[in-house]
Image (cartoon, rainbow over all chains, first blue to last red; front, side, top):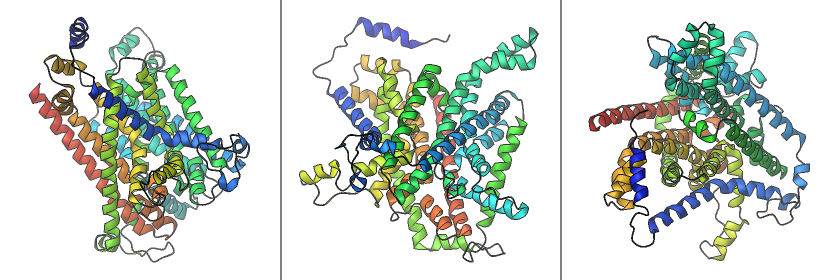
Length: 295
Length: 276
């Protein structure tokens, strides 16, 4: 343990507490009010969507916040196309998160462990997808598929595989980032101990390394899932009519034919995000999640 | 690691190569392109006032959004990072949810809030602050607000991790020695978090530069930023080369900013070494 000055000053602080301070703490009050306003700004849109979804009025008066005639009517009228889109999004995001782990974990191990020349270059290649604006990724993949299709007759745009590759591309760096962050703090002597005590390489990985990096894997997979689940700019190029992800369906729904049931399904998605977050808090703790998540 | 590297490497090289190459060919309309490489598209971009204006609007809205994200986000990040009670988890959860919910839903909420007959407008009209309903759809204010919603949650998380690296004891020391809260912030917290803030704000700026969804929905077909224009050029005008050129310019701008931030980070690191 390194020398930490926090405890010493804490003691001093506690002995002298409360610290002598004149008058009313206006600065502190201002800070709290300011932060509340930030929170209102940040959370209001989601609260409004959930609130407005509870309004059961007729089609053209259907957006009301606060709801005037509370009912769950629009939840019952979510069209199947939206459920299909949600299904596709779940499948895609789940697959992308899984694929990101399959590619990302070995990559992270390689970046941290391997004594290779040009490690910085390799790790920046792995991070590159995050530097490229998503819209550029979308159009780049679309043109790649056109070219590939012209050459081989296999067109990927508007297929699951095509969409999946695009999402995998942006999702992977998140897992690499979180796992790398944990591995860099991980004492590799633990592995050496396991190996020297006769464990095989695979069982060392499974029994020693994996449990240690697991919080990073969860965090990375969660980021990967959420990035894929909420993506519009890549999907908009790679989907086809009748084959859209949920955010794209929502995007078109807002631009063209608005239907109040969108509010209902959007609320369901918000609740889903809350649930995922709760699960993560139980599983690894939010603090761990963020500590490994900061790239 | 090798297989992973090959997969990602191929995807990067292949996708970037195709559109970068395409950007050098002339559009003949209907998705057909010319067969000799020329600089026409790039020359057009830098001579056509419409494209230059788009670039300017993209930079302007992104800079404004990044600035206001910092302004709103920093005090929140500071509050959470310095909180000792369990409430900090709840506050943090609020930020994370806001980050994870797709931007389309958030923009949807914004549109409802600022609807012509919504309560915000009723209030503004009732207080005679405006004489006709205020809308955020189709103007640059709306785009900036939309971009902020895209980046604010992320920005708070970023700044949170920056502030956590600054020992609390330094602030306490300043206060014990009689510095006021304001003075402590100005002379201790701000200088120490400046490297993080600088690099973070460049990251946020980059996110805004590439942000498509909020700009497209709140721009309402009237405000064009580069990402919105790229999508329109492909989907409506079917000009792949021009879209490629626009993408290349966006990509290069963003990469240059990234290089700048790496450079700054190095500078700060060496500067710090000298101090400690």
